[in-house]
Length: 300
Image (tube, rainbow, N blue to C red; front, side, top):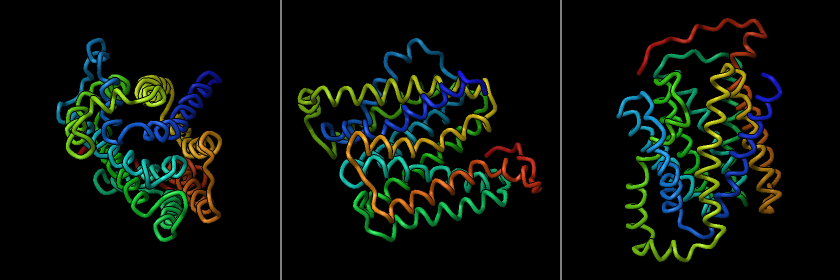
């Protein structure tokens, strides 16, 4: 990758890492499900009138829209409101990497290399620390909800694996048509029967948070990330995502004054190390001369 591509990849990492702190600020002014619905609403409209529909099946749009847009973000935002700090959320959500690798092996029969297996085990221990230890940054409920959000993100990844070459930004715009109505309905039922009053009372910080999460984190970041994947191999681009929880925790520390206990630092170190081995496992295997099987082309 040339310096331009590296800088663009780092820009996306910065946008996505800071995103968690921005969400935390937004959740101080808006209930989580309504916040999530507004985020997808501004992504979809009016962009959907100007961006062509990606060449994917309708069920794929609905599957990703429901698993990623409705379930994953609802779980994440609800957890982040009262049960998890922004920094810990950015870390625990990376459980999606573990679930994606496991589901790929189970459903697509993809081979898991020895370094990946070691990485999965190390990360599993790290995640386990947050489940068995009471921490000041997340409750057990918050940890469980964010890890569950990671699982539904992995489900969406399984669907998207069947769509090679799709334009990520175009896809995200059209996927964003799915979540608003069910999210607004859920918000009306569980959060408030007066959503317009909530919107009228929302301060500028809330609207800035919605704009950041919708426009910058979704449209701009996915456009850049999709361009990078078209210009370079996924093996060159995807490792940059390992920096997201690091940036997320740093941004939360600087911007929100969050801090981690010793046990949380140990858990975070284990998770980041395990994720690194999991994502880079095939490359490490080649370096070590380990035998790997070719990835099968069969679909779900």
